[in-house]
Length: 162
Image 1 (cartoon, one colour):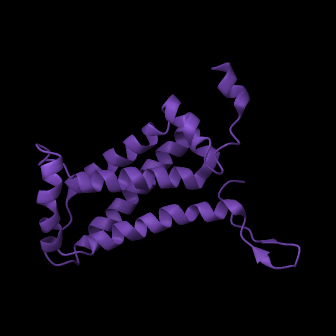
Image 2: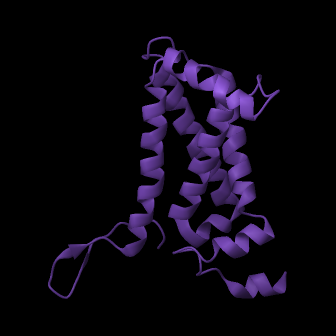
């Protein structure tokens, strides 16, 4: 079963995680990156913002940092889940998990100097996560995505019928 973390014994009797369990490091590491960025005071982030706005002019009303961070978080969750991530219910669960992590991120920011929770950031998180799962559903991206470890055990009969 995908996502099962039962230890298995190798030939020497040592306990080993199943190979798919290692894929869960991707979202865990990315959530740590988000947490670390959320820990920075507002002054540090404000120093980086003009540089970003120079490359993407006219995007002052949208928080691209949150959008990109949660787009990537959704991709890492889908990678960790494996082939089951193609199902719409799983894609919805990925978006909800990202938004829930966004809620904890906003709560965390309430403890950082110069930062405060902002519902607009949650909207950017949700949009980024939703577009991330939609991105992996695009036919061209899906073909490439299947080449990644753990993504190839998709039921090809359904693929051929559609």
